Amino acid sequence: MIRIGVLGPVGSGKTSLISFLAKVYIKRGLKVGIITNDVVSPHDAIVIYKELVEKEKLLPKENLLGLVTGGCPHTAIREDPSLNLRALEVLQNKEIDMVFIESGGDNVMSTFSPLLADYTIFILDTSAGDKYPGKGGLGISESDLLVINKIDLAPYVNANLENMREDAVKVRKHKPTVFVSLKTMEGIDELIKTLDKELGI
Ligand SMILES: Nc1nc2c(ncn2[C@@H]2O[C@H](COP(=O)(O)OP(=O)(O)OP(=O)(O)O)[C@@H](O)[C@H]2O)c(=O)[nH]1
Ligand SMILES: [Mg+2]
Image (tube, protein in one colour):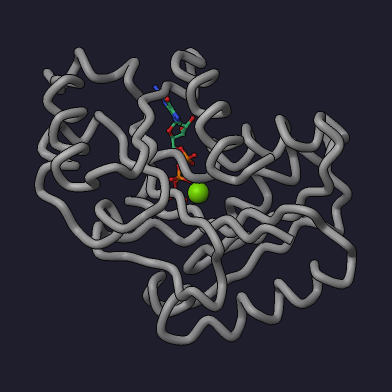
């Protein structure tokens, strides 16, 4: 079971990315599991349930686990990942091929414990401006894949995508960065191509 940790600031597109990727890989025949971490409600699990279980009928409901962590999001994925480890155990018994773990929205220093994730995706969005990824932060520099989402919104906040690209190379060296819009689907082919190569699938 490949364990993919998805993290990034509040509202950057973690749930949207996981829903999209889950659809892609389920349609290819992989058995996908999803674990969401929310601080005070199972909101994201409900969003995914409505989309992937009820509407699309792609995800068996028992493959979706919504955790309510009740505290600092990075505690639940790094300092004390016990709740997430239990959830992974539950999915492991169902012979899942690939599991996405969504962290609660957090800051740029957020990282997954290696106990939880084999591969990590950090997602930023352009609507916060183009200062990141240049300002750095462990999550941005150390994640296996950086996804810069909401490129459709870049013109509205004068975010310069070329600057962001150059900064990403400086901060991340040879690790990949992709630019996408999960609304218009621009950049999606590159995202899937990169992820397939990275995961060897
Ligand atoms: N314009 C635009 N909106 C997007 C895009 N991707 C996601 N959104 C919207 O951004 C909002 C937040 O997306 P989510 O996927 O919920 O973000 P998140 O990172 O999971 O949010 P939290 O879990 O609350 O931290 C939603 O209203 C999405 O529809 C995009 O590429 N462009
Ligand atoms: Mg979310």
